[in-house]
Image 1 (spheres, rainbow, N blue to C red):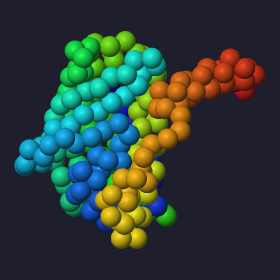
Image 2 (cartoon, one colour; image 1 turned 90 degrees about the horizontal axis):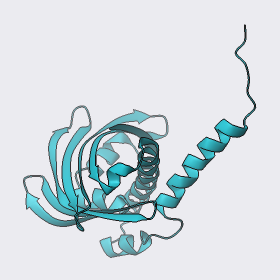
Image 3 (cartoon, rainbow, N blue to C red; image 1 turned 30 degrees about the vertical axis):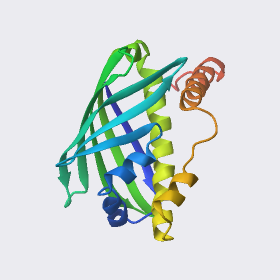
Length: 194
């Protein structure tokens, strides 16, 4: 399943690209992600926890940066993992491309996601909604982390500021799905102009 997301960060493209060199910093911006080991040569072990409806999935696996194109500001990550309770597997090829826009940097993310097991039971819409919420949170966290680095804050200060609160990702994705449904059901029908 191919999922595309775009978001903007109010920072210059070169600064955002430099931030992508700090893989532990980047991973800390993604809700539910945790790097557990640096294997060297741009390979990492980690864990990702995601709630999909009533099911909490926790995938442990590896991620490898397979391409880093400094000239075109493009990075490709190949990741795969299995749910720690044996309920499924996930593989993802993610590419991110950065471009300068007025007021900051546009990050275009393409995710080729393959799911098996419990996560695969959710429809494309729910998975896309969860992905959108994750990317929105990632963008906010990245913006805040880059600003904290500019202020000279320590990693510990940033960690305490990133402590998550608020409504869960699954709930926000469900709200997105319901709002789409209500728009379709309750917006007045407008016939096409002749």
